Image 1 (tube, rainbow over the protein chains, first blue to last red):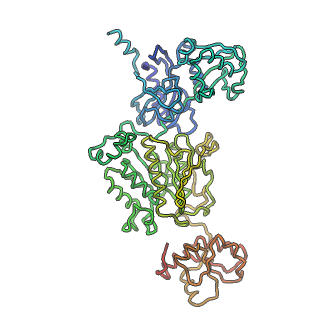
Image 2 (image 1 turned 90 degrees about the horizontal axis):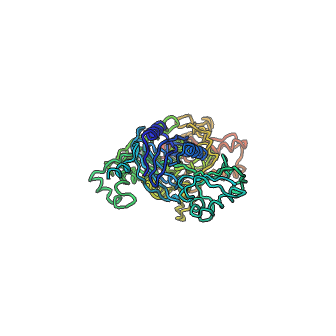
Image 3 (image 1 turned 135 degrees about the vertical axis):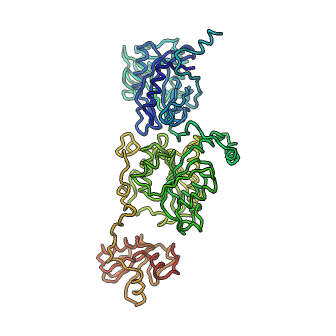
Length: 152
Length: 483
């Protein structure tokens, strides 16, 4: 499960909408406890794809390295990567899969005609042959699972 | 002793340590030391062949070791080694809009043979319904494309064409019937398509695609299918597709051979990667000049239609980076690997073409509608009526036909000597530079070239038959068939 707090979530949506009709990308920093991930900070990064960015994005490894350093500095972890799919569902495309890595959560935001529509989080496997959907909760500052546990 | 920073998800294999300090004189040794110490980590960094996994970049301090000495890069005390994944992606696919249109019960019945294929199903059929496909040209390739894409349930099909149906089209452009001769191809095609599938929306673009209108027309479509027969439009379609990020499903035909591939899709090559420059004008004949087996565009057009549907459904392996070659005579398919050209002026990393250019000038051919280049002045031409009088009077002159033998068999002019244009230069010496010489072909284009050859060789009385044997049929002898 990955939960994105309201502040980083707003930043991600704003970044995706601002980049429309192109794709945007960025890093998500936060913490990991077991398989519960919490995103506390969204770090917009430059889409470095040289070509039509309406359907492609590329992260510079240097930028990712900087994001990892920033996370360590704040005592956080690099939890995942986000990018947007303009006028397209938030599925994990073949291109996404083949250029992914199994270490992180990949959050895809579907932007429909410039407005946020829906989002999914994906976990690619080691060989990058398939990705499974991960439960995604966004815009919530407390963990509903944790609350449920308390109430139970 | 170098320090290796461990990415968060891999810390479960390093007893939660976020960095591990290891011995090793080089980066390669350090990574081996790390994975010997924590064997569970190995498969996450190395593949089965022991190579660092393709998505992993190894950095020494702030530099990628690929640009240093790779595995052999020296690691000193205090150096930091980082494992950084290379990450990219993108929808890179014909956008199925978020809210797919529902199917009516009639549509469910109509498309039932699609719906029961697991790879298509209801969702696939909805994607087809949501899809917007642009066909450039309603001719040989456009005919099978429009028929089958319509039947398959594409929601909107746009067609760019400004031609009218001609008798010579009927041998292969099966969407047009004999009764359609003289009608606009757009109207003829749209009528058949609506009859096949009333759910379809047909958009008629009755224009010549140009640098001025191409981006505006293409931008509303998910993918473009190129069924053009000329180089300026082919380069125009290619560049516009690359600039807009739309896949370009390409096909071309000549006599018994065809080609097909998908350009400008998912990081694959474009038409310019394959052919950076157009061929010299006149070198590659069009269907009108070279002829084409009537069935051939059916085969190639349906390969294009198949690729278009696959791209929309997002299934299978698209024909990207592969040029499919088809030879009807030997009935063989071959495949050539196409690579993206890193120096490609339009889709390469440093493009020099960032907007549409003048494609007629680029291809060295005249703008349609513009005055044809003056190959022949009127003084050097002879009208068919004058030629008829000349023959009837029994004038002393030489009449040469520069068409091909198989064309000569279809029809010929009285007393003409056949010398195909390709062999013509070898025969120049057989004529007297002082003779009165008249040359003809089918329409007057090839014979103009032959006239120029003679004039360069000092011949003074050389004339080209204006309009060729087609004009002869129109004005002199209607019993001569036109082809």
